[in-house]
Length: 401
Image (cartoon, rainbow, N blue to C red; front, top):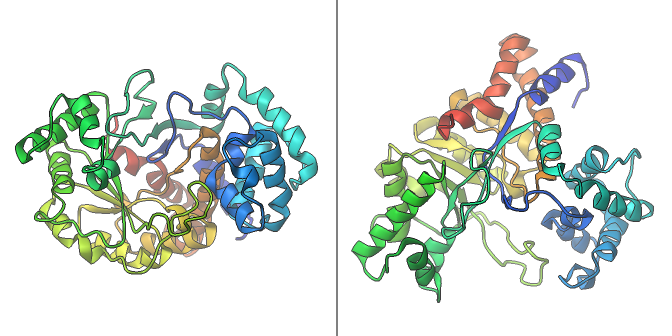
């Protein structure tokens, strides 16, 4: 990507846009890291280090955190070509006082000690919000999570429903549902009442979305998974978007590291969702697909269906090469008011900054090449377009005040 005045100007303008991050795994009661181990324990780093030859011995939960970080960094020279390495360097520079150009094992202890010092600051959470220019961030809440003890305007609740849809018959799930709703969902009518009670509870606490991740073979239908269909019905009743994260196979690599076992395949198609999209025209479905190869299909569905919205760049597609091509396709084909540009998928707040920095640079290059240089937009209009993807559409689609 070229580095010139236009790109720098657009990037700076996008950096000035306060972020609303519409999907994360942040724990609102422990949103920031406690040590470098929380940073390098992110599955991207454990996956890459293990894939590059690191033993799982130090990746075990009971391993010494300092030793684990040292070993993950020791292996970085094997994956310092990756986007994820770039995220780490940016975190080290912005949050840990790192001034070098490359992180090596010689930096491990210094960075670990710096993390203990900086992350222990009483105002660290506020400082990360400020440095990141972050205004709000969406959560991923289990149906029986407590929704108390945090600012729901800053940490926006989202009802995550995988457990209900795929594990309802497992021991304890029905009991958990009864405990949180006061309803024993032992039959159809009571199940319907319990699901509605969940929505009432979440909406009362400021929830702005319902969400689920779905395997490639899943096909929603009114006669199929009744809980899933009830969720869509309640999204319609309560006016919540229903985030669909489509195409993940769980536990493909059974001996993989924690959270490093899941992959995709090419059996999945959005044609499996045609009954759902047609049955609920009033429900907005922000859709994330796991592969860049499925992006054209998502673009086509978003082109045709008013209620289908491309949502971010998920997981294995969240690297510059795929984001760049997928973003270009979306901008060329989908109404700009329907594009949710990005989400961090972060587990700790420190990751929002480097991930969004990566996206903003790609966004600036793409808009410059596709719209400003050909004379289709002025620079002012280009900033407005980028701001729409970064913020305005999130506010409108999720009905944020």
